[in-house]
Image 1 (tube, one colour):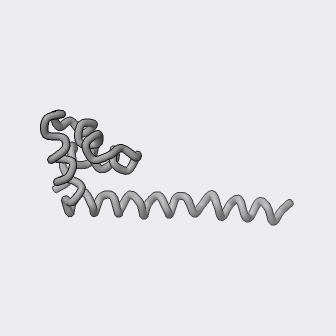
Image 2 (image 1 turned 120 degrees about the vertical axis):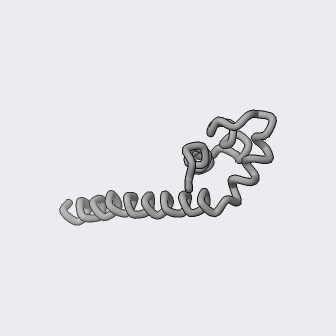
Length: 75
């Protein structure tokens, strides 16, 4: 089960933060953030969540490109 902290970690990691900073952003203590970040980066639930979000991003990004090409054809 993907916990709120795991979700926050994954979103922080996707935003470009490193593993340690992502763990801190998710609410883990600074003392354990380095180890926890490394563990979470390998967690199957976290990896699956990131993969799903990346697929959603690709699908959303394709729509504006299609519309842009259509607009260029009308000009």
